[in-house]
Length: 518
Image 1: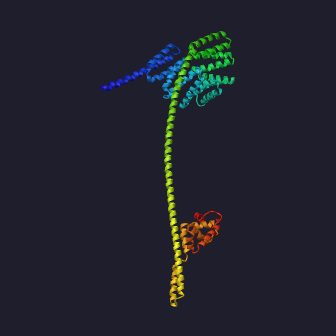
Image 2: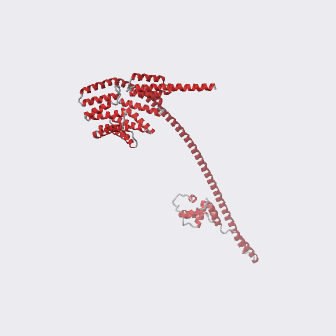
Image 3: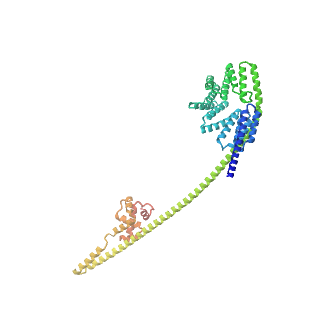
C-alpha cells in the first residue's frame, strides 16, 4: 500500500513539474507579447528565458510564437529564422501548425515587398482554409491575395480574389472582414481609374465600421489609411488630412514599425497638400528617424541570407523527396518489368502448350485421316476383289450354262426336263445385277462421287459413270476390261471419249487424278 502511494505521489509530482515548466514557458511568451510595443529589450529578454525553459516537445510551438512576435516588431530576419526552424519540425507532420507558419511567411514576405513569394504562401493558406472550411480565414486569404496582385499590378487577378471574398457575405455577416474587402475594392477601382466607384467603396467600408461600432485597430487603420491616400491622390486636402489624422488613432504611439512609418508618410503628404509645410517637415523628420531605426537595409541583408538558407534547405528537402520519388519510380519500373517478364514467360509457355496441343491434334487428325484412307483403300480393294470374283463366277456360270445347253440338245426328252430344272436353279442362284451391288458398295465409300460428277458433268451415261468409278478406284485398263468383259482396246477408247466429255482432251490433267479429286 505504501509503495502504491509513493508511486502515485511521484506521478503527481512529475505531472505538476511538467505543468509548471509549461506554465513558466507560456508565461514568459505571454509577457514578451505584452511588452513588445512598450519595452522591446525586456520583451526580447523574456523570449530568451522562454527558450531556456521550453521542453523539446514544445520547441516547435515556441518557434511559431517567437516568429509572430518578431514579425509584429518588424524584425523580419529573426521572424524568418524562427519560422524556418518551426517549418522543418512540423512539415508533413502537423498541417494546422504548418499553415500558421505559412501565414507568417506570407505576411513577412509581403512586408519585405517580395510579393511573388508571398502569393505562393497565401495560396497554400487558401487551399488549407478551404479544405478545413474555415470561413473567416478563407475570406482573409482572398483579401490578402487580392492585395498581393494589386502590388504586382495584376488587376484582373486582384478583382477575381476580391470578388470571391465579397461573394461570401451573401450568406455570412462579418463587418470587420466586409470593411476590409470594401476598402480594398476601393483601392482596386482607383487603380482602374474609376474614382467615383473607388470613393463609394472606401466610404462604405468606413460606414460599416462606424455603424457596427467596430473598434478593431487593424480594420480602422486600414480603412482610414486607404481613404487618406485616396484623397491625397485625388487632391482633396481637407479630407486627406482628416483621415490621415484618424490613422494615428490606431497605431502604437512611438512604436518603431512599418505601420507607424506608413502613417507618418501619409500624414506629411496630407500636410503638404494643405500647404502646411512646417508640420509637413516635422512629420517627415519623425518618419525619417523611425525609418532609420527600422534599419531596413541591414535587415534586408539578413533577410536575404535567411531566404537563401530557407530556399537551400527547402530545395534540399524537395530534392530528397524527388529522389525518393525517382527511386520509387525505378522500383515500380523494375516490378513492372519483372511482371512483364513473368507474363511473357507464362504466355510463351502457354503458346508452346497450345502449339504442342495443336501439333498433337493435327497429328491425331492426320492419323485419323490416314486410318480413314487406309480403311477406304481396304474397302476399295475388297470392292474390287469382290467385283472381280463376282465377274469370274458369272463367267463360270455362263460357261456352264452354255455347256449344259449343248448337252441338253443331246439328251432324251425325259432327261431334258431334269436338265432344264438344273439350268433354272443355276440362273436363280446367279446374281443378275452385279453392277448394282458394285455401286451400292462404292457409294458407301464415296457417297457424294456420283452427285459431284453429275453436277459438274451432267451429260454422262451410266457406262461413263461406271468407268469413272473404276478409274477413281485406280483400276488398270486390264482390270477394268476383265470386269466389263470387253477388250483393253475398248477401255482405252472409252477413256478417250470420257476425257472429251469432261473437256480434258487438250489438258495435261490426269483423268484418274481428276476423278479422285471429285
